[in-house]
Image (tube, one colour):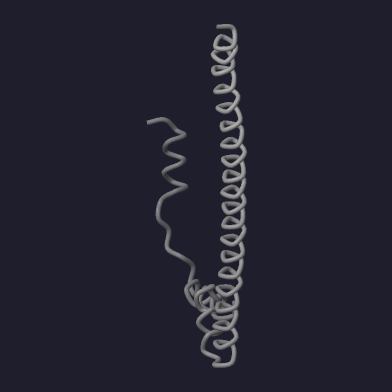
Length: 121
């Protein structure tokens, strides 16, 4: 082995901690404030009855607002559909009128030469 390997092995070999090390670590851990997780915060929040009702009311309000927005959207879609149907009915009526006029003019054009031929004879 190389001298570098030997030196690393000596540096990284297990050493016994100094006396009182565990006690000093425990003292530091006891002095530090415990971390409060989000779950603990939320569970503490919902333990209070008044706050629980506030949260429930907020959820109900959000659901109500979402329902109102959806209802208004459906009404707008329904209005657009009704307008499109009305436009199609008007267009159909106009096309039927134009078709009737074309048919009348076609009948007039076809029957006109017959009348002129009948007069000549």
